[in-house]
Image (tube, rainbow, N blue to C red; front, top):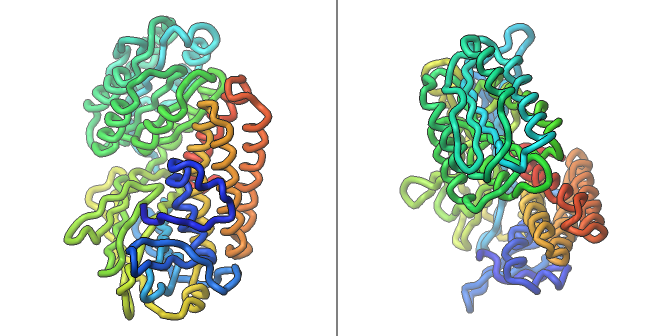
Length: 491
């Protein structure tokens, strides 16, 4: 752990080693907002101590922008200055935005879509009927030249429709959908694997996506995650939808995260149609694929972690960090938060060199964009470091890290550990309040909205039994929202 000891306002943070690990990153955000990390020369450990500078609005700016065919973005640092002689933790916020569609000139990608539908026994009744209606509605919305595959799964799987042009199979596929019935157990990886295999028949010019639907759970999460990760590496997005109150939101959410798709929760089958419709719209309006932003770091600056994008340190000394954002649809606004750390030996000017590249859908060749470099200045003056903080970047980092902890809080609550869930929420309230104190005016409303959301979640955790229907729904809805906020602003 990079931060071993934190003198925080809440003494309960030290009760549980797991909780300390979960909130360590909050300590880093707080440190950037009004605390400084110092290195112990005697023991080589790190701790946090408050400076004499009181929290104030962080008004520094250290950002560059870039643009190219089909997309644009920014790379912003939370600091313009770092402390010489001590370790400093800082953040880079990387945003990439796909150009919006314009009037009648909207780009419409050729698509290949595989729907992987749970038909296990727990889907019997209203859920299977609504699922069939929703898939029929999806089929009606698709264009003749789109491609579709349909897989049903329970404890086994069946490829009901191999990948084919919609115009050629619309009527017979509709008949097969109407004949679906529920029965058997749940084997998610078998169905997901079948859907991914079906998409192999798609040519390289199409945008490919799998939509996984389930109302249950099994013990194969790691296997499903590996399938989704492999799909993403081969250019296939995997989204997941949980129906009802009995599925495992951590499982289904992690599949969507691994596959760089969407995750949502609906209480009943009636809401499935809107999710499938959104998936169709996003797939069809995808304009950017294989979006990557790299950060080449100078000596003395090291990569710690990344959230919102897959991070892969590469090259000599692992100083080139590749952030993979995958596919973006028209108007999509993605963000990644990268935590960095400087060592105590940094001096002078430290240049961070970004670079961006992506592919345009249905166009040959990659778009390579050189991005202006960012410079950090090493200073011995803590006040200069404080003045150079960017409160907007700190607010964004605090929001994302709070979402990660809120997902953990929802999981703890779902497992019946109300005390730990409440403590994590209170840690979030503290971290976001600190970020709000340093944030510029335009960032404050979003932080206040997030704080208010967590206060309401805490009230629910305390008032509603986790096993109750309302409690299970609250845990699933919270997980879905916070997973969305990790990669796109949801507050």
